Length: 153
Length: 153
Length: 153
Length: 153
Image 1 (cartoon, rainbow over the protein chains, first blue to last red):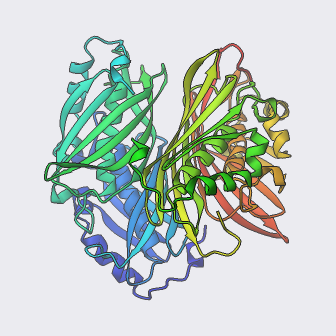
Image 2 (cartoon, helix red, strand yellow):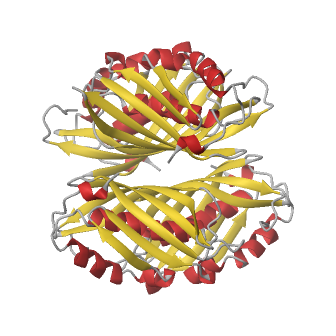
């Protein structure tokens, strides 16, 4: 997939995405950073941290999903019109390997943008000693919501 | 589904489940409580809290997934032999309504236990002003892992 | 879930569902029958037949999915307005046991109806010697499509 | 993903895959051909045909899923030992566009092989007037089954 193929409908897509990311308290809880914002592709990074782990010391699958869902959601958001908010309809995650590493890189990419429904894919990479390993993949369906009170950005 | 139909292989299933839950730092981050442990069914509760929210003030879909994944994982764990650890292979979550409420109740139920692979379903309920509302459903596939170093419980 | 709780927006929902089912050539290929149509719940039955099998003589997972997808799709369709067509956005199926049996009963039930997006769950039961066994579960997301040429019913 | 990176454990993987495919009656019902067998990647092609359609004349989502499931299943099968059979644990499919076209090309690729559990991804391409279009993506989890009577290949 070449995200450069996508044309954003909102020229301010990057600023708008960054502004919405800042309002996700969950991203602060993860210690997550918005590392890259391209039309149709968003990268979020985070360090390993103990409060995010399950009983074996790996990142909890749900915490991996939290970061991947935001990466996919914002990837879709970059292609939405300025007045739209984005909601996740559903996602599915496959855990390929224990999420152990010093850092994690979550890549969300739009596969199919749409007026109402957008489909994205996510990849979670664990970085350990300079080596990257794919630890999870996500399929994610988003909805653009326009004109609903209290739901913006 | 009637979880009472399941016979645990480990008579200490409840203590073992509670002990593993205590070691999930992610559950402390969620403010989550293990409210019920039955053979094949586990209930986790948590209050709304700002550090778990997305940009509209609802619980982040990934945080809902984190609690549901633990509810499903521990539901499967109650039916596993004493020497097994549990890992999530994959899960899928459908977000039916914004996760807004004072409290949340996550119910994980075993649909099909197996020697290696166990399938569970999860339901996330939001409680607001004494009213319960179904806000998410999960399908979850678990693997029992036996004899792998560093992965216990 | 109590499907009787749903109020159809189209009083002709049953006739409309049956008429659309008749136009699904894939249902004839499966030898499938529309056994029940209620507001928010549809049951499809089919006999085992060799042309639908995989290499071990069980129903192919995809053929189980075909019948379940139609059961879920039409369950959603019963609650849509008269001018809407229904498309499947995505589904996920868990195969719990080999699909072996004399007959199969596919039950699709609406979990959350919506103006645009509807979420359903499906259950596939195998019937053998008078015994029913749950062999697969589905989670399914549908979209109501209105006003697109060539897509009706 | 570069499937050439995978080393088959069974040097006869291609013959064994073709032999199992021949025994899938469902593939004959689809009019499907095993177009390519590589270690970790399988391509299945089929023509549009009326008995596979839904009510709008597109391929039924379940029929797309049937071909994709076989492509993914056999992709995993190429990397399994000679004594293993393959069963699908679960799959999820996203329908990106109506499955209309003259021909369809289903590509299954292993993302993560494992002793017990293998994860694959599938892509369904519709070919119309020489143009290819991605119409569906699949995530699929397989289990290698060894030593179960009546389940071979």
